[in-house]
Image (cartoon, rainbow, N blue to C red; front, side, top):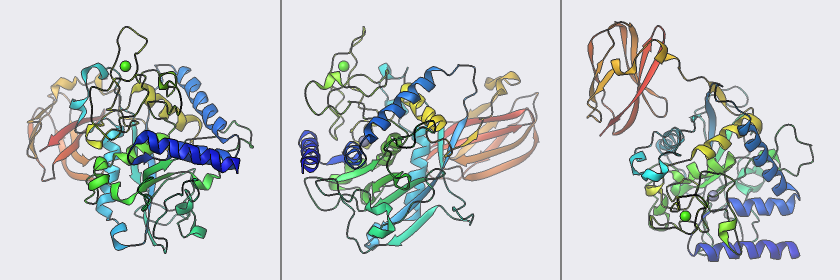
Amino acid sequence: MRTKLTILSIFITSVVFAQDIHRCGTVEAVQFRNEQNPGYKQAVEATFNAAKIHTSQKTASEPAPIYRIPVVVHIVYNTPEENISDDLVHAQIARLNKDYRRLNEDTADTRSEFLPVAADAGIEFYLAGEDPQGNPTGGITRTQTSRSDFAPDFFGNGMDDVKQSSMEGVDSWDTDNYLNMWVCDLAGTNPLFQIFGFAYPPAGAPNWPANNGAPSSELEGVVVHYEVFGDGNPLAVGTMSVSDQGRTAVHEVGHYLGLRHIWGDALFGDGCTEDDGIDDTPNASANAAQQCNFSNNTCVDGGSVDFPDMIENYMDYAQDRCMNLFTQGQVDIMRSMLETARTELADESVEPSGIQDFLDESEVGLFPNPSNGNIQVQLPANHACLAIRVFDLSGKQINATNGSLSGQLIDVNTTVSPGAYILQLDFAEGMLNKRFTVY
Ligand code: ZN
Ligand code: CA
């Protein structure tokens, strides 16, 4: 009984502190699992500390690979409305790729004091092309359920039901090798406690003892409420409109890769003494509470500058429209987690580098930018370009021009919807990627 009272008090306290919708249930989920598996919370913290140590031991000269994570999206629906479209899933993957590569459209909104720490995570996501049995797949599963929702109760019970076929949910695919995302009615109908998403942080580096209290690995992954999944979900209206750009999933994947809320989640006392373990996020005692209030400054920072609260951070609770960054410190943790705790998850690819050894990037022009989709590319005089390709941010190739071209002005006419795209120039010596925007 004591256990249940503890959980109840934490849930109620959180709800009262948030004073409105409860955006993310990760802290409660970790607490709940800790009651089921004593030592779990300690394992999460120790894994975080191990990732920090791993980061500090890296040398700057090591190449920084791009990590590419295969994703399976399980859509678990009761009503047709909950059975969201493939297009929305693709829009969600594109949003993840923009935000985790700092290719988002709103980087210009980052306040100048935070520009020095805003960082590209070098992590990309793609829908899995092969299921665990080796069969081709589009990376999306659809299952109708008899459950009207998968909202946890006040005690946290039922939090993981959507991940289990025995509870009318859908079992995960091998969680070591896929990022599982479940999309369902997670918010339910209780107006006091509606969560948009949650995820378990990594809880066991491979060099850990077996009895570290980690929850069953089949439960690893991200759960997101169906009305806020995808960038531009038409159901993200009313209460849900605060997350209309797919950034609930960006936030939950941040937890899945080991990040904490930037305000530190202190439940009692002075919140300024509890931080997120990351050095370059300013101290904060409260979250942004679904607002975009740039005057928030809840703690005095220790250094020579007192920074405002970093409401732009994906790991705060501002509205999607004013979130636009991860910091270098957060990026370091997420990458270290892929190197120490979720070691089988990502494919590694070394981004074409060394291009500067043979090519001065200023020899390559791309204009106008932004454009209406018709751009001109000025190629360097002394290096043959073998192909010019355009990709969208989900990695889909839009078009290609082949040949052995140099010193020319090439027209690239691209009929695409507005957004950010990548122009890839393939030289014999290596590849050069340039970003452009279509309005
Ligand atoms: Zn959260
Ligand atoms: Ca401050």
